[in-house]
Length: 206
Image (cartoon, rainbow, N blue to C red; front, side, top):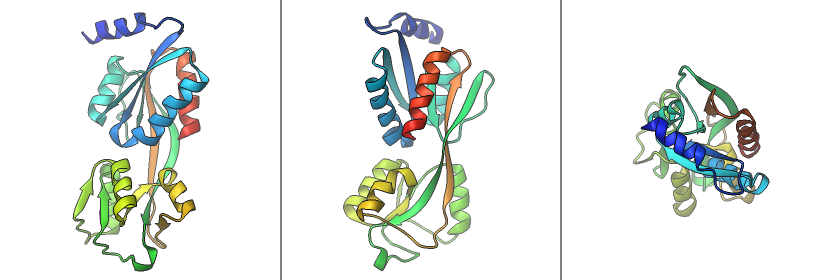
């Protein structure tokens, strides 16, 4: 059934387009990387029809392996036969706050974002006594909450940079930074030219 669905997608290239590309992303990475990638692809390569697919990591990697998704943006992809993994950006997760003057280690307004098992491990080692009262599994949602309600949390440097520049957020001095590499996963069967275009765009917006 999956092969049949994939065949239908490949055949159903919209009129006036040369190819169809399905780009996937983990839920926590759709904004801004997937969103900006789709926007740039539409502007720079209007002859490529796009399908955007957001999913949980386990299902996303399975869709790539089955050929239902051409390229997926992930933070900790599993290695599987027939798949290639390319580093998009070596990102950092940084601790920011809306109120630096009153910030303290046990900030009651701290929002804990579930950035994956590696982050959970390193965060637990750095803050063994932390018991956050608000936990979110979607970075953009947590960031919007902190910006509107005040507080602190760990977020991708790329995502918070505009708010640091505007003064809406502040880096917490002395707080540890955590590595957060973002990868593009794709099948070895994807059209090389179309894939190369997608990877170039994704690197530019990451």
